[in-house]
Image 1 (cartoon, rainbow, N blue to C red):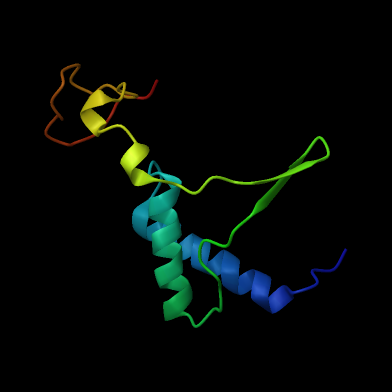
Image 2: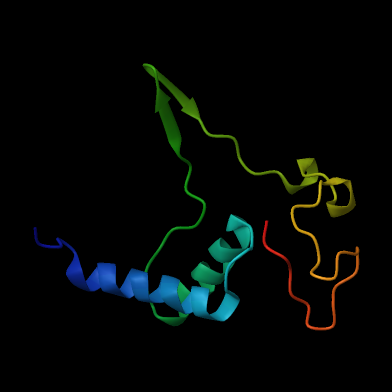
Length: 100
C-alpha cells in the first residue's frame, strides 16, 4: 500500500522524532504539543493548534472538553508515580529514577 501524502508524512514524523530526541520521554502531552508546534514552525510545516474536536460515541456527538489548567491539582497533591533510585524523596546524585 502506498503512502498517500508521502512527503508530508515524512516531514511530520521527522518533526516528531526531532522533538523526541530533544525532550525524551516522560512528559505530559501538553509539553510535546508545545514543542511540536515550535518544531512545525521552524520546519515551515503548516498546522492548526488546538482545533475543536467532536466526539462521536454511541450515536451521540459531543464536544470534547477543553483542557483547563486551573482544574489540575498542584503537583504536591498528586500521587507520586516514581520513586527516586536512592529510595528517598530526594533525587540521587545522578538524578535517575527506579523503574516500576
